[in-house]
Every structure is written in structure tokens, then in C-alpha cells.
Length: 319
Ligand code: ARG
Image 1: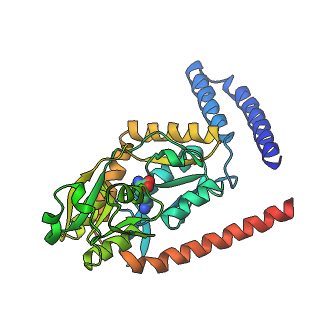
Image 2 (image 1 turned 30 degrees about the vertical axis):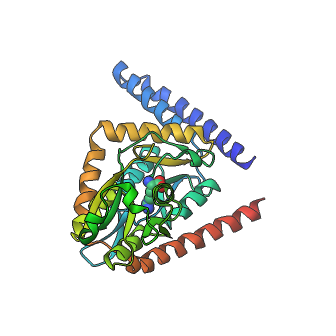
């Protein structure tokens, strides 16, 4: 009910703004008039889109996934969120005229927050897996990609085919809640499968020799293999969905449409290619790995939690 009124009010305001605009354009040349009319139309469309917090685009992400999203260390030694998903998030927020709020958390958390409607978007390199269809809407695919099996170079000759990964003596990693966890169960059911909340922790386990192998998104595996040459991407792993999508708050058709329009504009203009290039550059510099990440993530999650609690308290008051 509340939401309905907010939109009705926004629509009324847009209508009156449009009325003001037209009286000004009367005195200008025809070309400018058309342009003004077009831009009013565009703005109206975007303004009619509801978000969980008015004026904001709230995005959940899981920054353990370079070059998609990760913590890069800046000149002052401070970790800050980077990656092409983050640049695209900013692009979409700007496109919609909204302030961007990114909430970092573990990957399975992003899916939960989205399924509960607490955030507008999940931007964490989601594969459009059929079992997520009921809890989120998928944007168009914004980048293509594939799946890999990764191990230490020293062990590479043990894994000539996927069948070789399926042995009880192997400990094999995959991220909790990810399609890689499904791939592990599908291809290596006899192995000891360890699910971990963060891909960075899986990398640390591989490097420490505590895991024999892991299922990881190919582009991510390539990024970490660049920083850790002892890692080897030994196998291509088939998966039915190729590419990543943004998870959109289920049933918000206007938001989904706007997100797709923003993705299209960002890709058509070539801007998205720049984001990918930039993210790869940053990812090959100093980035936060494994457990060090926790402080930064915890601080940001805490801040976000406090804010959510505040909003919830306000909402309860308002009801
Ligand atoms: N593409 C995989 C999936 O959707 C993994 C994504 C993991 N993302 C992340 N930011 N850790 O399940």
C-alpha cells in the first residue's frame, strides 16, 4: 500500500514537472523541443521505478571474485571495492539517477538477501541457473564466461579428464551456494567436497596444499592464476548456462527493464569493455586475499546491518 502511494505521488510530480517544461519549450526551436520531450520521457520512465530504499539503488555483492568484484588496495594501503560488476553497478545507479549503496557479504548471503527482497540487485557474477529462477529475475547476460577445474601445477598431471577428479582420496573445493558447488557434486561425487563461503579462502587452501582441486569460474581462475603462478587451470568444465547476469528483485518489471536498458547502453558505448580492462589491471596489482579481507568486509557489513536495522525500525514505526 505504502509503495503504491509513493509511486502515484512520483508520477503526479513528474506530470506537473512536464507541464512546466512544455511552457518553456514553446519559446525554443523545434529541435530543442523534441530533445526536451524525449529526455522528459526517459526521466519519467526511470523515476517510476521502485527501489527498496527510495532514492537509492541497493546492491548486494560478494567481493571474493576478481575481476568481477574484489578488494583492491589503494595508494594509502586501504582496501576498497573494485571490479567490473562494481563499475557497472555505478553505471546503472547513475543511469537511474540514484545513489548507489553496495553491501558486501558472502555469496550465499547475496542470494538470500535478494530472495527476501531486501536489496534491489545482486551483482556477484551470477550464472542464470534454473534453480534461482523462482527467487530472482535475471537481467540479460552482460559478460560471457565458463567453468574450470583448478589445482596446483605440481598436481596437474593427475587430472587429465573430469573423471580423474572423482576419487575418494581427493578433497575438492567450491563456493557455498554457487553453481560450482553443483558442478563438484555432479562431476566429483566420490570426492570429499568442501564448500567455503569465499573463493579467496578456496585459493588459500589450494595454495596451502590442503585441497587437491577446486571448481572456479574460468575468468576468476585466470585472474588468481596470474597472481599465483603455482595454480594451474587444468580442465574446462561444461555447464549449461554460459555467461553472467544481474539478479533483480523478483517481480519488479520496471527495474528489470531499466537494468537491461542500462546494460545495453553501457555495452554498446564500449564503456563496459573499459571496466573489464580496468578491473583486470587492478586485480593483477595488490588485492586483499583470504582472511585479511574479513576486517574490511565485517566493518562494511556491520555498517550496512546497522543501516538495515535503522530502516526496519523506521518501517515498523511507520506501519
Ligand atoms: N557464477 C557462479 C554462480 O552463479 C559463481 C558466482 C560467485 N560470485 C562471487 N562473487 N563469489 O553460482
